[in-house]
Amino acid sequence: METRITQMLGIDYPILQGGMAWVATAELAAAVSEAGGLGIIGAGNMPADLVKREIEKARALTARPFGVNIMLLSPYIDDVVDVVLEAEVPVVTTGAGNPGKYLDAFKRIGTKVIPVVPSVALARRLERLGVDALIAEGHESGGHIGELTTMVLVPQVVDAVSIPVIAAGGIADSRGMAAAFALGAEAVQMGTRFVCAAECTAHENYKRAIIAAEDRDTTVSGRTTGHPVRCLKNRLTRQFAAMESSGSTPEELERLGAGKLRLAVVEGDVDQGSVMAGQSAGMVNRIQPAAEIVQELMDGLQAVVDRLGSII
Ligand code: TUI
Image: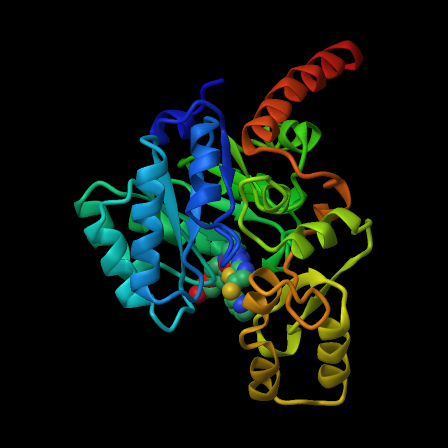
């Protein structure tokens, strides 16, 4: 299967693995790239030297292209950008802000820059600045989210720009993939499904929590802080909700959230930690090797297309 995205990135299948903080380490990224998709290391809030180590680890595990996601709210963002530039990582995705000020440096060395956008306005602005492609990520996603659902965001972004668009948010199987292509996307990005890849180093409890989750088991916290985050419901999200409804300040809420993602992903405390996951958690039912996930997605896509051909 060829699209402008597979050609641009030099990958076999139009599947990107979301660059999830703490979850998307070198092991997962390398496994997805080896499977023919694009694996992405999540830099999140990691200090730059740790990001550098993950890049080196991924290079030792695969000769295929992989990416790094830089989280623009990171306290270490400038140092992380320097490390990624120095390592000449072929693809950078960005999240949680406007990457405009870093674009020229990446373009100069030929790194493809693919920002996540939650709106048409930001999509237009970033296309003008010269980004290579965009990820239109809907409200169904895990972690930090925008307002619009994937179903309405993707076609509006596709219509507003001429660069290729990758759909993300709520996609976890071949049906979602086919739907994304129907909306005009040229690849998909999936996070939650890849958390449950065998190669993902997230704590077993984190994977089990996603597998156990049903359709209504995620919730959005932090709307009052301006940084809404989707997680599995647990003691932490109930505490967040109680504090938000009793008028806690954004600073108090930020303090409650600090360190909680690492607590869940690394320590396995899925009760008091932040179990970021998308609404597709209800569709993720087992742990499988990344290559099996990719193969299942691609085989299933043909079956969906055949079925559509017979009813349309
Ligand atoms: O970034 C993500 N997902 C994330 S980041 C993260 S770490 C975090 N934790 C707590 C609070 C905030 C961050 C966990 N999950 N996905 C990509 C994404 N980007 N979603 C939404 C956005 C976004 C939002 C606003 C991108 C650009 C944007 O621009 C605002 C502007 O500056 O115009």
